[in-house]
Image 1 (cartoon, rainbow, N blue to C red):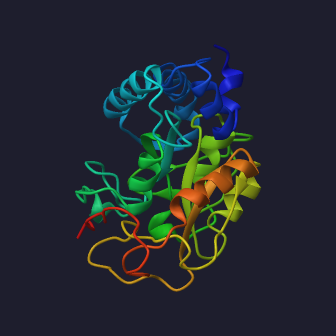
Image 2: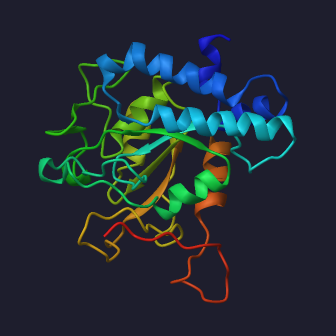
Length: 257
């Protein structure tokens, strides 16, 4: 398998897995090897969850062998912005005083992506409090633009944009108030979309003790194709129990409080 596969769209990666051209574990190992080789200079992926990801990828391959498909992202390895809760991993928003904040539950969007088959293997870097058009914080350090590491990748989803542009991940989940998805997508040469406010529930994308939705804060995808953006919006852009009691969306995810 060549490194060209690492730059394919998530839609194509999912199709390759379905056609048995590649396995989920094989694809995950490709990304992990690229992270090991390239990430030290870029510093885009700042939290790895490779052991659990490999276990999930093996399960995805076993399910595929039985033609049991979990969803449109079956077996596709991906990362998420550090600000999203992933059970057992730190959520700091780049704040040194939040190093000990370990998520007890997945964010709702993470839960939904995994329900659609995604294999989440890590988290990507952010500026402090997601409040800059560069990506530096005292917890994880500085992220460089993979086209020129002396330049910034944008922010606040800068690690997300850089990871995609460097072929370190198959897909990304970011957030945006004042261009935090759009700015890194532009700086790094990838696709990004800021959805309509409140289209995608943000549960699990708040530091404790904050519970309220920030004005204009949205979550949304970054990817290597417009098709991928559409796929992810179809997965995470569903009502939740707070928005509509008459629209069932499956089990709610307990907030990390």
